[in-house]
Image (cartoon, rainbow, N blue to C red):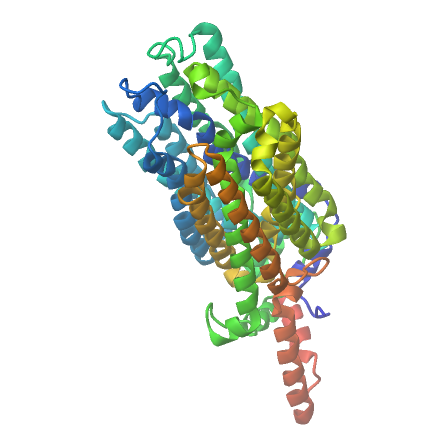
Length: 543
């Protein structure tokens, strides 16, 4: 139970009515995630085009295709950058403050998105090598957005709607995936209208329009636009009250900042704050940390790792599964630009009907059902649908039995329950479970574990789908079904956080209350009133 002696600023944040600043924070933090998702997933719409442009072999009778190792590097290098960026910026967010680091990540994302589209060179190796270099650093900037956005939103939100607000920030990832498909689809359609071409089967060389080299560059560079539009508003946000008070120890500044945001007058309570900080001084990875939060960290890291194996495998390999679902034609039957159009259109439809609704179901139901139930349900249903696809893959993709629509529905449901499930809750929970001074770092470690899982998907699972062989795709689906069952099991390490304050969840209130009780007992034996030190602290803090 939370202490009745909680700091006024923390109580005000926990019990604040939903106000305009909450929605402003959602949009500002959410636009970062919109950019993140666009930058990470737009590569799936153009990777086949890169193969046609730079790896065509005239001695074969097939369109150019990225070698497996190159394809994995192009789609996966940003994930490597994201992992390292999460750890670095998450740690930095606890050391320097959320706001100071927040702008750095955005600048890095803008610069590297533009440079990705300007990848240069006279050979395929130089172009792809330059692209991979800039996409690594793009991922590095994206990585910082994960812990910082989640931490900022959790520390701004009230306890009744905190989960919904954090989930709403993450739901902008769904918008980013939709726009990655939509932008690629619109641009490729415009290019097609200007530069039509025969399919590869009738025209091997000219089926790959030279102008397509501009298309993929424009798609990548447009990722800089939403990030650059958000920069000004990020810099206008004040540092979170919890960081200013509990980490910097500046009760006066925290009260002024949050009082202005909440439009109320708050007491500074500097002396009371000093005692609060002194009660919670154990270090990250100390025995006390592992005693209180070791299982929590294992739970958040393991479930995010297992989830991202499946989630990123789905998103990065869907271009290889679309032909089996009848959503795209075989590569040899279309031109290069038409292939981009068809892949983008299919990605857009799946994201709009399967991916996007799941995010918002989480937003609407997370405070009713709780994080724990939604995560369990999501892992279970993902496993069931992937197992069905794996077992019945040949039957479902056979166009003669007219069951391709069922394939599309089952595939879409795996996306729906990923997002109305662990893809959202694994983002929410690490932002709630850990103490303020290590919240960003612990969220970063959990997210980095997730990106390690994404790398397993990009460099491992994707290998099974690149050639479109039924046996290999079935094997991939079976593996993913098993990882989801493991995620279901590891979810039991994570407690429910619904409806409680951050300090109550992390145990910071509990430690302070225990220390106060000990002091009170000592004061009674000395004839001192037990609450006198707190009353003096409040009085001094309001001068």
